[in-house]
Length: 225
Image (cartoon, rainbow, N blue to C red; front, side, top):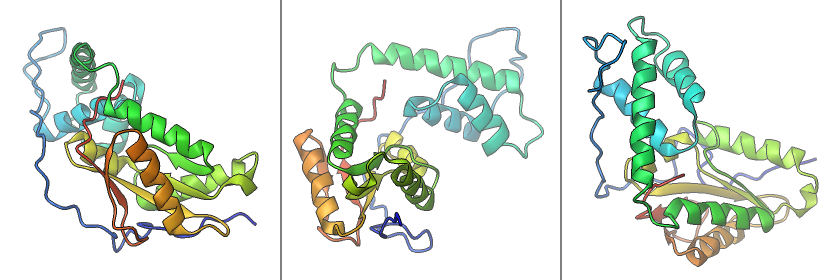
């Protein structure tokens, strides 16, 4: 029988770590200025524009994903959504992001993070990025990956962050990573491996060394290609 053992941060009712105040890199809500066949007398509100902005900058979604997420998931109850204007805003944000990419360093913090997750998977830890919307989702995704793994006996643990963690790090906060063991491994052992790989990649990580707290990657500049 395959099973993941509860590690840090699986319960939704009692999050293991409070989000400590940090100096946040605030971003401006994008404005639509370009005229087109769309009725530009209409404007998208700040909340909707903010959702488009961070989802685009997250780097995990394409245009069709974002149209579905914005119009059919987040704001599905609103009857005033102008899909043509949403489409225009998404295109504008993607264009802005492409221009910003030209100024990014050859190796970004997100490139380093990708290398960490690849290294963890090689070491027998199921490591997932943007795994669901909640910690329970991430745990379930990890369990699914374990069940589908070609050699489940080689898996010693799991590590993930979910979309709420992603939204925070895109907005300038630290990235929280949940982790835990499988089989006979120990939660602390998995935490130590994750911390080791993060530090090897040159990322700043904080952790109290227990399974009561998720690891936190500090000062991570989110630039995902």
